[in-house]
Length: 300
Image (tube, rainbow, N blue to C red; front, side, top):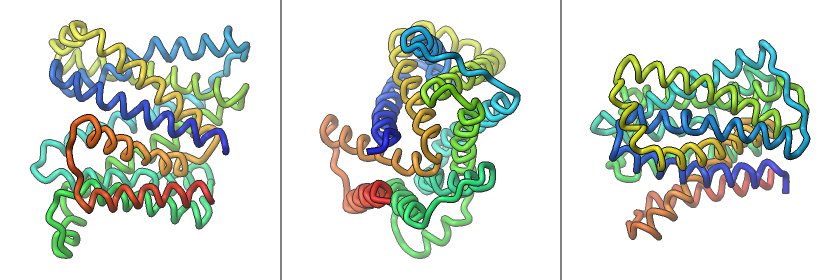
């Protein structure tokens, strides 16, 4: 088994934990605060990752360059903007369709990987990406009345366009992070990933903190009160991001993001086992397609 596969699965599991932790934080702070903690409280752990690799494993530091900084800024801003659009979708009454289109990230990452890095995915990989994307989109619209009229109407709806824009920005961010890590040229994928994480999360922390100071300074006090769960969120969030960056240093972003759809399986497992909620046939079909897509991807 190639190393990027277990790394991606572990990152997906950790991201699921981070999402659950952020959902809990939403009860004590606003959306901006819950978003900030993944960066601000993840920054100390990003520093620790780099120091552990330098002094624990003995790896030399990676040396940043102008190209690296540029890709980090593109990825960091793209991820923040994509997250903002995704959260903005929740303000609409029928946000499920838009959310489904935001899940086209792996397919869009394949396009941007070709445009920016000249990476061409093979036919089997593209089929696997398409299967997983369809599966996730099915899950996202599982509770929306399904008809051909609704499907065609959704293609040009405002929600769909916002969702597509979110997926586009997530795809750009994924490819940018891979480009940033590869531009370091060494010493190895772990130190390159850790360095990319450190610079990215530092940049995002500054941006988000400045935004809070401008728009909602009171949010900072709410974050300070909830520092313990915020610290846990920062830990699992930074660990998940380290996993993503490491996997995307080893493999194309589109391929990693396709396998990362396994996070939806983890989410449904938590929903059924811990909260006793039932899932309908459409959701089951979506999960089955995700599993099928992942199997095709691994066989490819």
